[in-house]
Amino acid sequence: MKFKKVGVIATLLAAMAGSAVAQDVRFAKQLQMNNLPSMVMEDQKLFEKHAAALGQPDLKAQWITFANGGATTDALISGNVEFVSAGLTNFGILWARTKGNVKGVAGVAGISLPLLTRNPDVKSLKDFMENDRIAVPTVKVSNQAVMLSMALEKLYGEEGRTKLDSQTVQLSHSDSLQALLNPQHEVNTHFSTPPYSVLELRDPRVHKVFDSAELSETPLVSNIMFTTTAYHESNPVVVKALIAALDEANDFINKDKKAAAELYLRVSGDKLSVDEVLQVLDAKGSIFSATPQGTLPVVQFMHRAGIIPIGPEKWEDLYFPEITARQGS
Image (cartoon, rainbow, N blue to C red; front, top):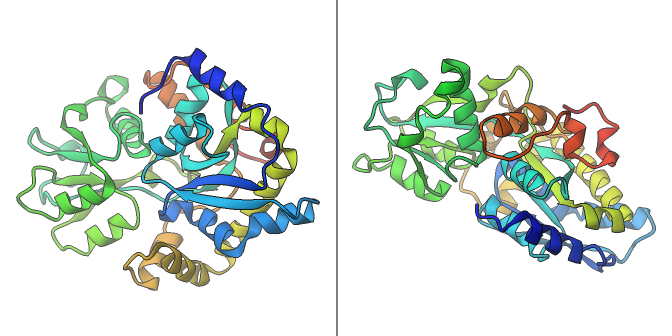
């Protein structure tokens, strides 16, 4: 992800400060399982429901789909959306580069990310050889790339966090899926995410080496809803309605996973079975909560590893006060 100088970014953010509450509030989203609460919000018009309850019945959510997290953050900085639902690491980069002029409104969800390979000799991270190639959505900065680096540091110490950098390549999830299932392709490993991981594991040649749930004893909310400080300060009702809508969406998912799985398939169009989606929603590491969990260690690691120029001292540094009253981490 490329950034202009901080001063330029700050100017763009300041220009957004005067924006009044619009009839349409634009949300950037991606069609993946860790964005399921946003899908529920859109499908059940929960933002509109809670905005009306707070005295703003004319507010409407406009949901805009993007292919990757980098595109969503670019849309926020350019003023083309008001809110972004994207990966924790994309959020952490923007928080640091803007020196806190972008902060988290709330968590969205977290799904464990599996590292999959078709190399039968690779049973653990220690088994990768020079000819193995590992695909991640964005080298160095994506959730997958950072999780891989964290796992390597846990295994080898600080100097080992870059041990597999020369074997890591950047591919979209869809291209990685095709590569992994092609025995002739040089990319034989994919740090994946559902639904791609579900499709990949249907192939008997593919197996799991590691997943991100192994990094912590508690689930990680790895998808964050965030906006600019200027927009937050100018639109308190919008922010309150959004948090209330996220809470209701996550309650719906947690209380009826089958209904949530059916909604996901209807909205996303993925060619999975309800049972396959349920397995992901029920898996260790899956969490659906607006309260941020486990986010501080990841962003602090990003600073320690030199990915971002500044780091937070506490998790509350990353988020707006409406959510920091909760028991997050």
